Image 1: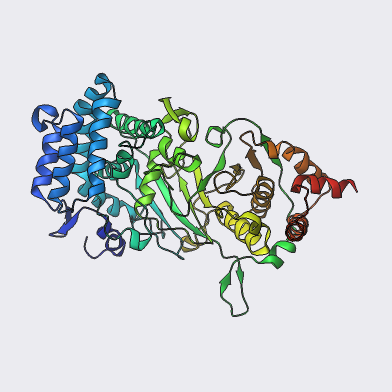
Image 2: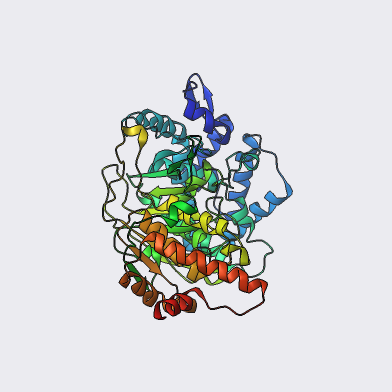
Length: 501
């Protein structure tokens, strides 16, 4: 095992070691704690939130993890959640069934990971799929079994991942300490409690039956052109202006949610540049909610560093486990969800999610050419079909007929212009030769005439290049009007006015 390049990249971020050419837990005492926990409260004495927090502290000490002041809040949070926020019936089930099943997974974690590396050699002929850090500026894909993901997330629950070098290597938080710690002394935190309920529900399902499938995580990098020196470069303004590709049809939904769409489509995660955003902290908007109802997405946070300008992350096969209601502070776990998506030839559910991060608080600068290019290229990186050069030029995912399901990307807390961002995404969907864009407006009043605008543009037979030039012209006028402090038509009204002229 020690000679594997992929394992070498990820081993510093795992709580395991290599001994006698095999992976193992480094502490016999930690193994003893897990063995006792696997046999239930009669052996482990873990029958309350307080004893659970004591056990977590014990396991971390066995790994020689240093304690810090903020972690004491996490331990209080575990005790608070299981002793006060859960019903006695639910808490009892967790201690008698769920935690023992998680401990069993952790005892098998070293052998599961070894089996993963053995199977990764032949999963896709000619393509590396082993668990490794998928760093910057290098496309790659990792396939994980749902069982192995269960073990990884069990490590997160017990806060067993080392954290010292994660930040310096631009890897997001992966342990659950901040998630549970946020329950302590933070005022109204019902949404945080309900995020944890989604996670606990996931582990309950695992304790009943471990899913047999796989989930793939891919770093996608946009590079379509060659510059004067022959190096690959991103599409520039000339590329978009000269595009003769036809604009695709648009389906506008004034109600409903992206994750509830029933057709086969690539679903957009309005992502933070750090995958998962505040999912394991206090965040509770679109990306964070998606990571709670599809908890297997969290596994990608272990090995996927910050996304660069031309990079996106696509996840295929993450199972959904929960229903929910509300948004942000009103978010509530509501019920079990049975995912009925079909399975592909690689054992993945046909759930495709792409994480694309938008400009944050761009203000008037979002109308500058460099910002238009940044957003359109970022979306194009996410929407392009997945083909593997290292697999003899063959596509791993045959995506004929798979459109894009999206919405107000970067338009909430990030402050983007929803009219502009909807049409920039339309350009990228069309340039990627996707058959349709299914757009969910989430009731934004600014988008009440999106359907009218897209139908008008399509009726005129505009290409991607035609619409791009109109968006650049509008943006230039918007910038000039700002300097003169003039009022300015919104983009949709402007498009309707020039088509009516």
